Image (cartoon, rainbow, N blue to C red; front, side, top):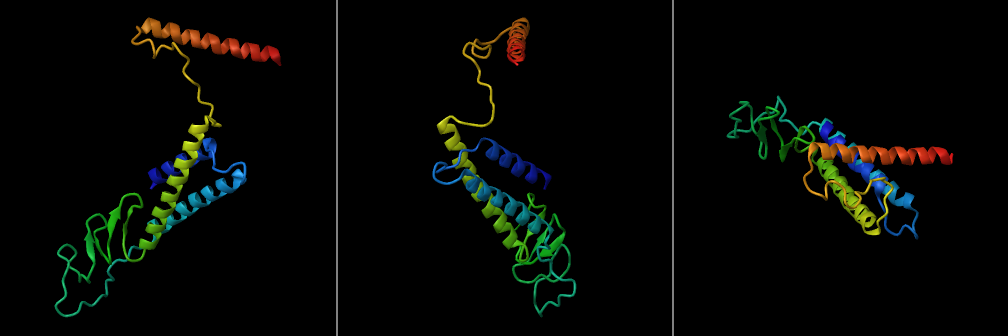
Length: 186
């Protein structure tokens, strides 16, 4: 589940930092950002609820009706639409699948939380796609990504180690000169 939170948090940070929201002149950008953050919070909540809710294990005291099936793996009664999860090593009522993203089975009791998690992440993906596409189309971004100047060493093809060192030294000299001129201006 840590990977899920890292991916959600990283994508959230990118969208918040560099996103360009639609209708920014008509509607305050904070409204769009608030809705996006609400979806982010609800996605985290529904993920935690799905992960921590029992998916609906077959109760130990379940009395099977005459002629019902028995689970071959756990030797217990198997109600209709129950399946044995080899990861959890138990029978789950209305089992859908064992989800590695929530580290739990999706079954009768936590399917609502799983579907809400999928909905909120889906909404976030569309909002991020729209926001970042508008940001790229307008050419504005609050991320300071340095552009590669024309004639940089990547454009010239393969260089020797000595050539790479010289290019690196030149870039360091330029940055130092820029810092010195900035310091003199202050």
